[in-house]
Length: 261
Image (cartoon, rainbow, N blue to C red; front, side, top):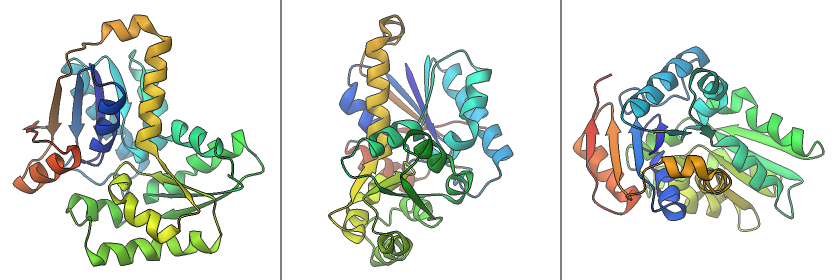
């Protein structure tokens, strides 16, 4: 089974993309809804949470781990790879590769949590591939709570998105990376506010393509994963609101199962 974890339910955008590209595989999801958001936490805390999240999935049969959280990807990926034998995927590298593969990528913008932006992980990876690319980042700490509250179409959300994107718009960026798996749920508003000429990169989509390519190139691992098209969804806190929002993200009725931390 493919295991995916995130700080909340925003990582369901990764599940959605995986289901589109790898529909035959079983997927386990864990959303740490009791401790969201991770973007305001220290690196040490995020690393500890990521280890616990991974163990929850591995204990339930996951044999491939997907870190569906940009904050955890930025600070915890190497720790997870050293600690566990299973393949570990993160959302940052695939999005970076997709961004620099665009015909126009002289100016790349990134939006993410404070932790992700502060780590400069996107900037460092982009510069390693294309040193001449100019990189601009903006922390957007209010967007994750807005998504978790289901305020996807509220006028307040539109105004906040516009304010966060304004500095990047002034830089006349060519590409914008959505550096948080919650953000694809606001992609329509983000595209509108940043402008049609800017290519918006969905990190969830890029990640799903990366996992698909890996399994194609590693048939031994692919055959070890269950292929019954089943999905289970675990969370560390569950409310009727979260249940409704999770179902709306996946556009189907799903059941969130509570896991005590």
